[in-house]
Image (cartoon, rainbow, N blue to C red; front, side, top):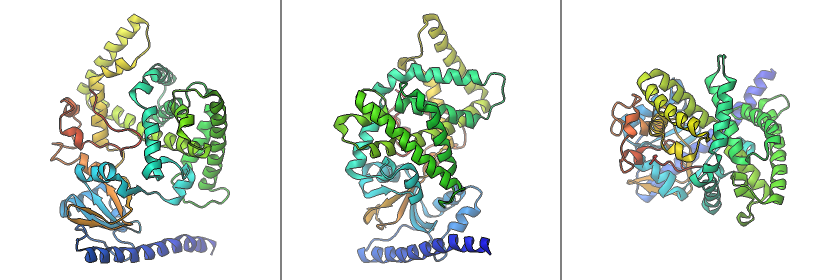
Length: 422
């Protein structure tokens, strides 16, 4: 009986939300008829549940999206997870949603995610506040700012490599540890190292509960995650207080506490925790896939190894640590990273929501509808990338004027704009 009641308590709100959103879907169709613009082609599936079952019955959601794209073209409508959606799978449409007309679409996440990361984090914002935060983050991670951190990042990499000697390692877990260490260095600098271990433990607890059912009861992963989030916020607040007194630092935290930015401690804490979250898994996933692809392609591995050994030999002879200038010489390595991001497409899609009725290519995207740019479909379109499943770093050998670089969108335009290596 208890299990049945729990099932009802969980299912009833979901059905209610689906019913409400089903009415909104009908309203969206009425608005389209009223303004004379058609909705994008596609199907909305069953009442209330839409095509959610079809999405999840596919072993890979990309199979579902590819089938839709092949049938309806690069922009189509569907209804999944209780939401009417417009999917876009062309680079032009992705830039329209994420860059050129980004003010018409707001990031959207479940409320539980906002509570966990912090409601004032950049991911949940738009407008002037979002632009202000993005400017601060972009400045903190600009080449000029990163330049001085290269030797410290090299030291983290060397410590990681030495810790693996003679052991079997879980590549993804080790890359997550490495990415987290680099993220913490980039955010807090080397002066706050005494807090690092506790920050890590709180973050790892938070991460475990991120995708759990949002039931805040003692013993649940979500409850443990929220407790860790509270402690994480307290640690960051303590660091912020100390940093405000010193008023120095070229790291991300230093940029946030700059008196000219007029950010509150709560705003800074939410964004610091959000950047840690954004930096870790995506970076670790790219590095793990890169190891896999290099293992699968001995000739590419040989070329990358030769490039790295040449630079290492020069560094050993001079006795100097790795520098920013050295990283700019890693042409083959850079191409491998770019091709890894294209083939793996770590983020298959991202969610946005139309804040008003939007016209795109003669179609109406109604206010309140979700819009999903499908990055993997863009990167695996044979019109742009012949033999798209093939791992071929030579695609990125050409100059930065090559149109490939307008097609290549591995991540949404936060926190960093994607630039080809020059």
